[in-house]
Amino acid sequence: MSGKSDELLLIAAIARLITDPLGHPVRHAAVGAASPIPAAACWLAKMQGADIRLSLLHRPRGNPFTEGTRELFDLAGQGRIDLFFLGGGQIDGEANINLIGTGDWPGTAVRFPGSFGSAFMYLTVHRTILFREEHSPRVLVPRVDHISAPGISPPGTFRRGHAQALVTGRCVFRFDPARARFALASLHPGETREGVRAATGFDYDEPGEITVTEGPTEAQSALLAGPVCDAMIETYPDFCRRVWGRGMKETGAKEQAA
Amino acid sequence: MDVDALAALVPDGAQLALVPDNSLSPGAFARALVRRGVRGLRLVGVPVSGYATDLLIGAGCVAEIETSAVTLGEAGMAPRFTAALAAGKLRVTDATCPAMHTRLQAAEKGVPFMPLRGVLGSDLVAHRPDWKIIDNPYQAGDPILLLPALSPEFAAFHAAMADEDGNVWVGRRRELATLAHASQRSLVTVERTVRGNMLEDERLAPGVIAGVYVSATAVAEHGAWPIGLLDEYGYDADHVALYAKLARSDEGFAEYCARFVNAQVARAAE
Image (spheres, rainbow over the protein chains, first blue to last red):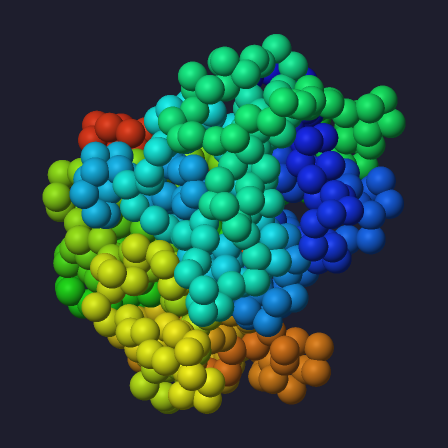
């Protein structure tokens, strides 16, 4: 996946997961750093009429917090964040995520950026959507080298929620925390069961019935190119330029330092 | 006092807390530290680290770092951090964001430790002998993490204004108040100074960090750059992308310093 139509497909797929009536209801979703696709999905769900409050951490203006991420984590600690997004340099079949690196601790072979708030958010928010565009055996591994945040927790350990799904550039997996196992839910257009199996390092269930991931409808595409892009352009200028061909200059919002 | 004089207050080997690129990170102060040639800094990312940290690491100013992540945002991984770790020149202690905040919150209350939910089951715990798990004394069978208070020797950030009473104004970025409350000395660069006392203005007061927590200030116009400052100027994504590109190699990093760090001295002297 590389083109902008693929990014729009991922946005539509994540928006459907957000509004899934079977999941914990999402009244308050938070989106962290460097996550333009999840952010766009949240905006799309909201602009389609879902009653969601969005807290976008990296929005320079209209940021909902007056105490930065400290406030975000305090909110999550209280259970007042329903949905969050996490990714990983490695993700395994039990939904463990690794943001530390590969090789010996702390990532002597390949170093990833670090764990951010994942070790806390994965256990304190009510549901998490895992998102990683690269779908390859080096990312989706049998067992992560290091656990930044665990996919499941033993009985007696405080935990409010788990991964709802893992969205990649090839497919959508659903996660069953009781079985600590993913199941293939939908294949993106052009992908096959065999292709996904070959590109996935961990084992997962494969039900008889698997749908094709649907891209945005015409109405969704219009929302994305218009008000969703408007809402995102200041936070994710590169992304908006690439996907919708829109630049910052027309907003006149950016001031260059000397 | 100018930014170079402010940087001179930080001795070699000092523990210095820095803030992320969305939280009034002090770009000019970091460049002044590089010019001063400080060595052996023990950096603390509150709660993560960005441009300023990568620059200091690249310039050989840093011995160790405790942080929850090092990132240049849309510009990707922090290249000098990654290179220093791979070369074995940097001791890295990994954390998770709310643990950094919680340790500062404990310090500002003057208590020795504070509990935090979550984190159990993360490999971070095994690599942090200073983090302890206890059974909740109020409810048996509920393991919970304890974190030691953290009172950094120095904290540095860039605020919009300082007043005659030494108060500084950070607008909505009040997480910096927690950092200033917890730190032993806070060094603050500001865009400008204003007359009077901002705490007497009801509309400014909520964004003020009182002078009792501020050790020294220096005026540095565009002092956050390439980081943004509230609604005054935006994040310079093009410049951070240029930094990320140049900092991929030793030669490129040296070129960056020659053009944007050391050249600053000449400009200031004009």
